[in-house]
Length: 182
Image 1: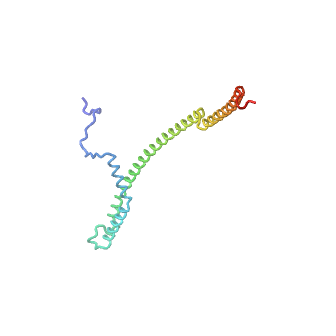
Image 2: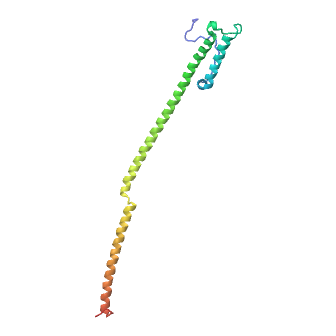
Image 3: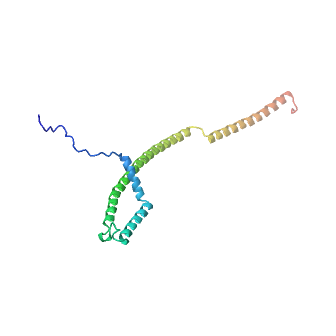
């Protein structure tokens, strides 16, 4: 049996502590931090912090200064560099998440627009089919004109019938020796 079996992984003797945080939680925190860094309160706070730092380390006696001017405010420079080195990736992360959300929203809008277009095309086809069908159906104006024509015909027939009846009634009266007989 071989002492070093390469098919079996060696267990690590050192264990690093694991820090488990969901990417969503971390992303929300990064967005909140980036959002806060873009506020006037943060900018005013940073300005006041730097002004107090510079005044403290410039105007107070050297024994009270913790970041003397003679060293070009090295500690302040390091603090601001550290803040910037963390801020930039967090802002980029927040921007990426915002871009992802925008992409998803754009995709939903595109799908909604496609459905609306399909619905509109369907309705246009239905309206066209109804128009074609309506050409074969009698409209209100057509029925009115037909009824008027029928009414005229009936009136003409009645007038003809009245004239015809008047002639028939006169001839029958003459045959009977009525008032109009000669």
